[in-house]
Length: 180
Image 1 (tube, rainbow, N blue to C red):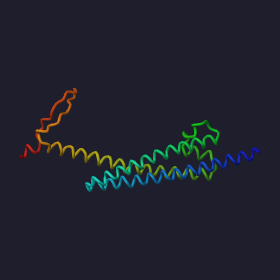
Image 2: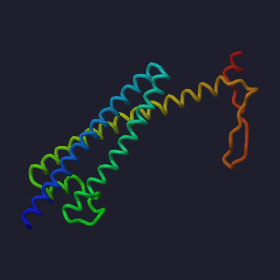
Image 3: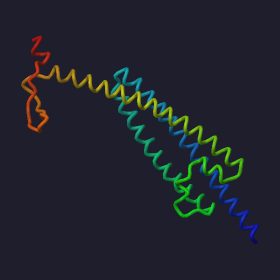
Image 4: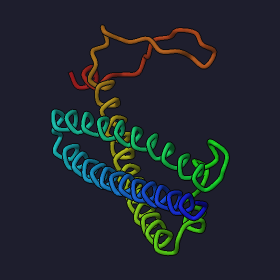
């Protein structure tokens, strides 16, 4: 009887590991999609295609939401795997893939370690492209702010705050005033 229970527990753990790997593959795919969107956004920014940038931002938000949902499922699966391995209720979610790989069969462990490397690679790629897109966007917004400030008519002078928090108006000369 004990042998049957062990076999059932092993089968349940194997199925959970398989579910986890499928989920991690989906997360990898979502991160690749996000990388492609960031690259497309950079291209759209370069072409000043505001409508396309807005569409891409919507797609990015959708993917980001799905990534969060999938990560919630990952935590649930990790908790169940932890329970199958005899851990306390929520201790499984704290396991890294490396730690989990050491607690399962060698074949399952190898799959988990390979998945860890694939996810690490794709998340680093997303981070790099995202950093570039952020820098480009920030620089572009800075330039546009300067342009709008320079061409703004003086009659529509906006208020700003001093270092002490008092309201003040800007008295710099606008380009329109300087050149007529």
